[in-house]
Picture 1: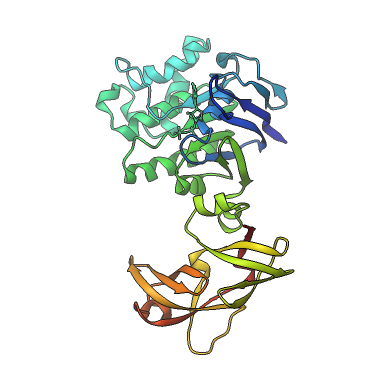
Picture 2: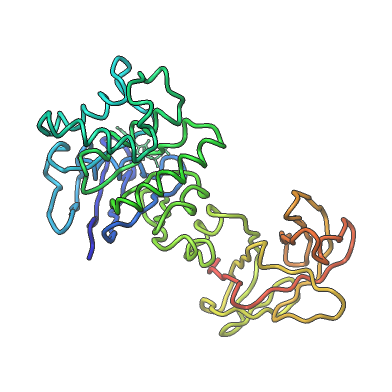
Length: 350
Ligand code: ATP
């Protein structure tokens, strides 16, 4: 059953030409983590703020467990919110910061102590309960903020770029920890990020947003392997886009070659794209469903993976090969036959 429902949610700021959030709808099952992913200004934060009750929509509805909360003030929505900046009270200890959220909700004093302890334990900070924020690292402060949001057992956890103030290594650590805690508690969560790796690594469902709309709402695998639009294909992961022409059902012409695709739009000008890890340099006379002849322009060695930037008559293609595989020995200037499966080719009308 849907735990969070958005129905044609819209927000138009006065004096702006286009809505910041343009009629988005989605259903999120109980216990799932949804990532709102998209470039700066696409409406992620505005969407989250409307769910939290910090921003009033101009249209549409917000439902939590079937209840319409659209008109409720933030404190009556039972949601936990964590922002990019930790927003902890600097003069209060970690424990008092967590207790504050419970106090605001009228949790009796006697109950607060054990609940604070449990929340801090959940994020692995029980030993640091008496420290003030300035005596904690960035990652630890963000964990306190998470504990504070979770202590009241919210119906919904809302996270707005909670990792962006952390350095790369810590970001990964806190990311995995947030996900583990969220799964252990089964708290339905909405997570705002512009970082695709973060979204793919954490989410059950990813909503890829562009200009106030959701371009695709699907699992991380689906978004990555089967992007619904050109925007999704280029925003999430690497992919070369080549010009082509659909000439029949499942058949294309590109750079003088005939290619097969599992699905094609109507005949006419089209764009095709293939993920680099789906392209294989073919040795000898090995065949594949699709073959484009090309030449290696550049070879980038990154240890486990070697990226070959290849020139073909249809345009440039990136191929990723595993270190130690036959294709790994290819060098700039060498001719190569690039093979890929029909199922791995995506075609968008141009
Ligand atoms: P970022 O990743 O940069 O935070 P975002 O996807 O979260 O971006 P929003 O903050 O939701 O985007 O903003 C969506 C659009 O609405 C932007 O064009 C922004 O300039 C505009 N906007 C946001 N808040 C206001 C406001 N209070 N008044 C006017 N315009 C606003």
